[in-house]
Length: 232
Image (cartoon, rainbow, N blue to C red; front, side):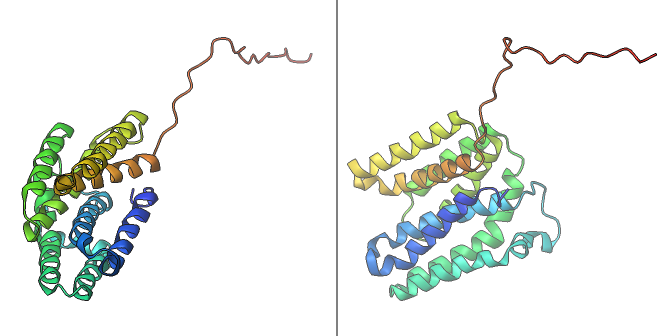
C-alpha cells in the first residue's frame, strides 16, 4: 500500500524539506512544521505496517522499526533543524517524542485501535484533534499529533478509499481549515492538524481514485456466434 500512495510520500518529503529551510526562511513556523511532520509520520507508519494483531514478544514491539529503519532519518533531520535554529530544548523535545512514539505510543495504539471499526476510529480522531488543539506546544502536543496521524490513517483504511465523494469531503475539510487560518490566525493550533490530515486524505484518495463503473447499455447489439453444421 505504501508504494501505491506515492503522492503522499512526495508531500511528506516536501514537508521535511520545508522544515529544513524553516530556520532561515520562517523560524516562527518551525513548531508548526514539526507538528505536521509528526502527523504525516504517524499516517505513513500505519499505512506501511498492515498488522492489526496484538504484539507478542519484545521483537514485535520494534518490528515496525526493523521494517523500514530509514524512517528514523526524519527524526534525526528534525533534531538537526532544531539545533541549527539554536533551540536545544526543542531538539530534546523532538528526540524524546520520537522515542516515545516509536517505542511506546505506536505499539500500544495498535493493540487498542488495531481492529476498531470506522465509527470508533472517527470518534477517537475527533477527540485527538481537540486534544492536540488545546495542548501547549511541546512534548504532549507532538505525541497527540502522532496519534492523530495514526488514527487518521485507520479512518482512511476503514473508509471508502478512492471514491469521488470521499475525495470531495477531504478537499472540503482542508479548504475549511485553510479558511479558518486566513480569517482567524489564532485558530492555527486547531486548524493545522485538520489541514494536514485532510491534505493527506486528499493525496491518498487521488493515488487510488477508482473510475466510475460504466453500466451495460441495452442498445448495444449482442455478439452472436453461429455454429456451422459439420461437413458431411
